Length: 555
Image (cartoon, rainbow, N blue to C red; front, side, top):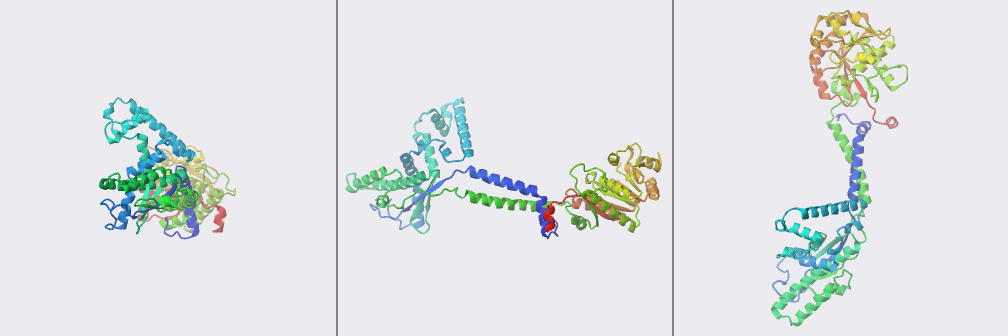
């Protein structure tokens, strides 16, 4: 991007030039965020607050107070116990979570997510059937695949070993509940919270309450084990603990209990029971889309300026003057259709006609002022459109009453004869080879405009250009015509360009907006500058006006 970029118009030009990038980025981000939100099923979170430093029933090595530990360490220890298998398994059994259907989420998710769930379940069943049909012995399969196959068949595997003691659905329910439970210590206290999430708000509260009570039951069971070892099963305190455990087990329904019953007799106390959450984690969907809207625009603009920074092509008339240090003779607007067409009616008021008229006038005044009669109009390649410009400049000056000769020096890829729809059976090559005279090779388009096509040859064009006949041909043309324009669209052949520029009075460069690169054109004209070629200016072809006209007038 140009270092002189400073005005609001320049910044807007960058934005409108890369509007496709900005729009694509905007659409991509918005669609991605929307799909992401659609695939995110609303989740509700409920929490229970627990105190872990209550008084113990006995003073045992296991249940000695936490005085030797930091408070945070005590909370961390207990919070890890919350998500242990004994606590979680009791909660799963109490709530029958293992009996939930595998597509339980479909009741709460979006239609898009529901289709993905159906697809996943279908693929899972297909894989299970494929595994069943594989010619492998049961003992060759790993534990998890054995359980999956037996679960698919409806059988309950129970060989020796703890891994098979529970059905596959129960094990999955335990693992799923562990992922949905977070025990988080409260810093600087002996409190921690149990967070439970679920797609249903009532279920989230029930799970949080049941897990917390299951944790208390586990705590009482540890105390009961210690007391039974110490006093036996008949001890009144042992009997009382057993009764408390049975009572709490009956309350593993998830329903909210009176505060006194919820606190319980254990060494840990429920300070705050879980209530049904009022909102889900996806309640901020509108905010997310709102932020995505502005962030996508910002990201698109950043991409636009990033592309502008790494783009080293000419993008404005000021770029031509800044990077080439040459005067701008004119700019030709881009034609979206029939870009290589001639001007049919130069008197018609169009932007293209006006641009060629201004360019022709500028070149006419410059050549008259500097007493120039023959110009080389050149470009990096024929893709820059120099041939069309040469033809239309000659046509415009001829219609103004000037006698003009246009010469096609593109011996390897001639085009001018195609534009004027004239034969190329004889041309410049035949003149340079001495086969015919100049006046015989020239073809008159009208009374003021003549064209010398390239012709054809088997010789090296460099040998033809680097001869006295070329200089004599240019000299003869200058004597017979008011203006001579030579088209040579191949600056990459610096030797031929140097020969032609030395035979003519001046050189004009044609650069293509958004195609010709600054370093390339500067490197190609360096030999011409070194040989003291008279480069009088440059023409910007295919110029685009990216800023809307209405907005442009206000800037």
